[in-house]
Image 1 (cartoon, rainbow, N blue to C red):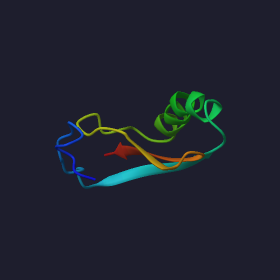
Image 2 (cartoon, rainbow, N blue to C red; image 1 turned 90 degrees about the horizontal axis):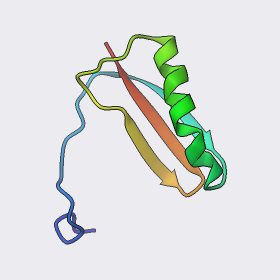
Image 3 (tube, rainbow, N blue to C red; image 1 turned 45 degrees about the vertical axis):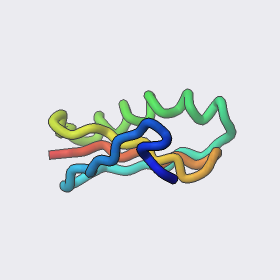
Image 4 (tube, rainbow, N blue to C red; image 1 turned 135 degrees about the horizontal axis):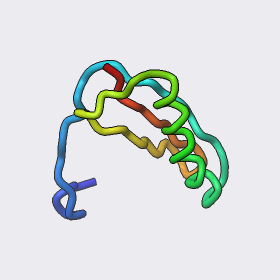
Length: 70
């Protein structure tokens, strides 16, 4: 894909440690799991609020979530 043709800007993900979880399920239900899953990750360790959380859509029914931790 051409990011500029899609109106997107390329970027770089900040390095460092991340907590990870994988969601599985069918849309739209899987999307409702994202907020609670990030909350559960945040409860496990203090997050690094200088870096963004990441949602990686591997497939329509699999989403990986990464929460940066300090």
